[in-house]
Amino acid sequence: MATNVQDIITKYNKDKTRLMDVLIDVQSEHGYIPKDITKEIARELDISHVDVEQTMSFYHFFSETPTGKYAIFLNDSAVANMMGRQKVKETFERETGIKFGNVTPDGAIGLFDTSCIGMNDQEPAALINGRVFTNLTPFRVKEILRDIKDGKAVEEMYSAAFGDGENRNELIKSVVQNNIRKKGPILSEDYTPGIVIWKKLPEMTPEQVIDEVKKSNIRGRGGAGFPTGLKWEFCRKAAGEKKYIFCNADEGEPGTFKDRVILTERPKLLFEGMVIAGYAVGATEGIVYVRHEYTYLKNYLENLLQGARDRNLLGKNIGGIEGFDFDIRLQFGAGAYVCGEESALIESSEGKRGEPRDRPPFPVEKGYLGMPTVVNNVETLCSVVKVLLNGGEWYAKFGTKDSSGTKLMSISGDCKYPGVYEVEWGFSVKDILEMAGADEDRVQAVQVGGPSGSLIGPDEFSRTLCFADLATGGSLIIIDNSRDLLTDIVLNFTEFFVEESCGSCSTCRNIPNMMKLKLEKILDARGIAQDITDLEEWGKVLKVSRCGLGQTAGNPILTSIKNFRHLYEEKIQKDKDYDTEFDMAAAVKASCEAAGRIPNLN
Image (cartoon, rainbow, N blue to C red; front, side, top):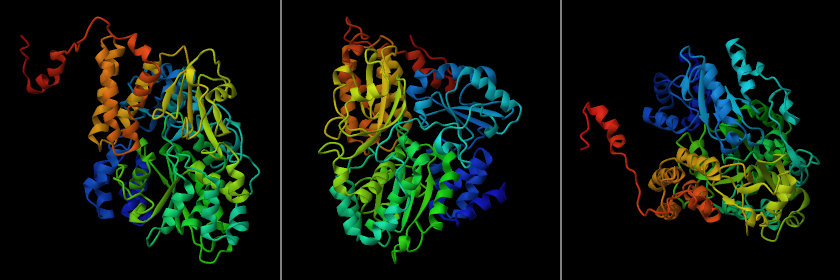
């Protein structure tokens, strides 16, 4: 074991900033990271044992205890539950004889819950030793467990054909489907890798590249919508010995999976976008931060990067441009939604806990390793290739005045055709429902932008998707009237935010859990009118949180109160102004057991 750990540490040149990579490799090699190994890692990287442990403890997929020879992580997102997760879960537990959160006595199988794994268009889905299994049913679970008992390798457990497109690639071999339903400029196949690098960049100065991007009016596709050209300009003008380009491929927002499709089918487009960004700002290194759930794409992506180096699309004097040196590496996360926030992503890439930084300074001034850093979304970087290829004015003709270009939408939930749709900004929610084959007469709500977005009702389906109206990072979840909106959707999303808080801010650490308890009180028919008011007031306090996660953690409850208040009012007690139903015996039970005394409640 020690030799393997030494090999892993040596692989990363004993660089303490690569701690995440070391931990990921150790976890993958041994199925867990025991204390003796964390001590060895600390010693070899010349950092404290506490530094290793605090990083390890932050991420969902790291464990200091064995997770089983076959570690099964079943997605518990709202859509997974809508599509039958509960029966799948019950089958796993019945057939293995253990509950989720445990490992079988023989150490063979571990069952664990996990947040959305980017497969909302093919749920229920699970990860088994990092491999994706989609469209699970109780029968399929029995087949998988039979194969496990027979000692089969995970790759031998697939019963369906491999997915479409590059999912069939020898370096992927996945049953995941792309489900591309509508193509536009980004997903179109009329693209020759390297064409901008060889034909356009040698004729343009970095300033001209930035001007062309500014002409396109493209704004960040991750949700915040900051002008891309302006961000690049800030970074180019910032002082620093070295500059970096980060691609944020940590799409942890439940309901979002468009970046998964780009990473599978258009990764060369993405890499070229990063090269363009590097040329524009004067960066020499690019890092693609990929969510842990997509590690099944690692070998495929690494192979493409090497191919780009072989063709002089990465490396020294790229595209024949003297002095333009730029390379890209992959950085995988380990399960933390907050790492979708750009400064938390940078912290994680430096081998730390993914806690957001105070701003200013912003990453374009002081980012990765203290140097000026641009962080762009996958879709944004793909878009700039087409901007350079066809011109900023061409791109600006798509969409609306304040929202130029196209947007990739991840559509899931109660519809016939879940998948990825590339549409121009300005489409209405109603248009999306029609494209996805939803029964509009039965749709009671649409979650726009994932849990951090807005839950809207039919009276708002005519609203348009654009920065001036309904801004979104790309997720639309369709919910029909067969669902209990507050229990199936709002409570699930609220539990997600409770679980994913980094705990840095007292507001985000405490208030979402308080709101969850208050919501459960209302759902148990014990609520009163004041409880609804309390939820609205507590949600306001969340706005002072450090990052977007905390600031939007109350949105599932707040937007549902705003647009579906009648559902809350139907459940509260109309004849009471005060009702806590506080259970003193339950409250002191744990302390009494610890102290070995019998409580006197009389």
